[in-house]
Length: 630
Image (cartoon, rainbow, N blue to C red):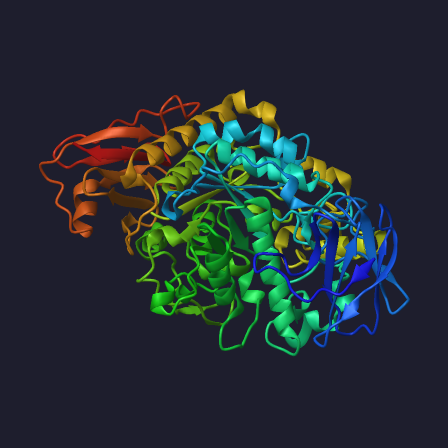
């Protein structure tokens, strides 16, 4: 039996199939449809059930006898039958029927869990399918003790929303509420989150609201108003946030965000490519999303955004007329390090000289571009971040984009020498910002992270062609034969090559890199002076184009981080300190860490601690030291 629904609880999911003790409420938005029929394929309520249509184009019904485990779909105007756009699980893939899931049956054990404070985060980004040999949520769960002992405080899962095929980066998701069946069932994700909390780890989930994947995106078939031609993005028409029907699109996305927080106990979200969430409403959608999560999550959640525009208002407090995000991926840090150590100069790297003076400016203020003209973008980029606490800048020296969007998926440490890699790692993990590591970075993993898909053959061939055409302007791929060397995203080997190789941890340079990361993260955890900073400015100076000096202090302990990025040389600390209005004369410094020590370097040169009245530090090659005032 099916009946219309006229009321719901304030804390209940608006869209999708929501079970109760004796039935299931089904609700979907389809303003273009005249008639919707629910088709339940299994269980006591199997059969067809008409849905009642409200004036706004929302269809709904409640079906007695329907229950968790039932599989269902919707028939539009008596023609095509499609899965639920708000499905909680797609056991047969994104083209198959949806499954009713009851989140209330999972036995959580994390009632006493309290998430990490936002300035205490060390984020570890991972892809579920390639992180472990299993390629599943269970595989990630098994390695949580390793991540805890490493010194990570939050894991960030790349998008898990279900996608076409059996492998994908996650940014082609089409079933936004359904964890991919390639990784396990919904309760497997819940068990992963529950276990992470037992180990003291927060869980951040990467979510994609700016576009849908190219295969299996049935949401626009239910409503042509989900996308709008009013704005355009790299994926075509934009998600409709300010055109006709946008109130239901906004609600759909808000419902999705709340569902991850409530039904999976996720501690926070990373919003993908927020520059492509185009909204000219009086209240921008991201501001509404932040306020909604803050008001209805029932606990503190962390919300980060990926956005290259350097807009300080995104991470300023609402009291300062900001959007209130906890952090934004601040790419300038990565771009300067990459240009300085590896020499990249194409695309957005052309906007950077790759000097330690640029890196010092970033550590002082959060990002480099604060309104200057960008040659790459051909317009001004950035705003003044001087009111933003430093920990709200999320920085890295590699992430999924900066590796996977390279033709061969090579990592930074595949390109530069080990000494420069160690120096960059020290600066990253002692910066006053929030550091982000990409899986395997800590042991300088040999595996690349290449771009992979598993789309239907005709569409997949277009993706492969487009991927290779994308690099035609790069000198090393200017010829068709050279472009053929670029890994085929559709090939299973491209996916397999991207898996981490866990047997490397105890081997040679991998073991030494891991030892360095463990020591750096232990120092960051033990000494508040080396963690994320609530202050709105850092202290850094560059004695020359490849030397950097950073001062970190919490009023009790004071540390000096000194680095050379390309070659050896001498740095005078007294002069560098004077540039920061600090007088080091008469003080003694204790060596805390030296990247060229035998524990971290295969062939350590003789680099001693600072000595003599001049407090000069001489590097035989690239490297970094951490010193503590005594």
